[in-house]
Amino acid sequence: MTKWNLPEGRMPLSSAWLKERAQDYSQVTRVEVIDASGRAYTKLNIKSVELQLQDDARTLKLFISE
Image (cartoon, rainbow, N blue to C red):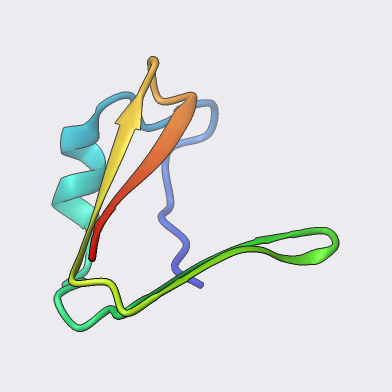
């Protein structure tokens, strides 16, 4: 898991912040969301994935295409 260090008390506030630190996701073919119970969501055979921070960085959205 990637951990980005921010100064104490600061949070990322824009999708530009995430995009600057984003990795290359071009090889990703599966997306999973994991919660306390385990896999809550799995999507296979995806063609692309895009991450966006919205709502003043309170919402992380993943846009996937098949």
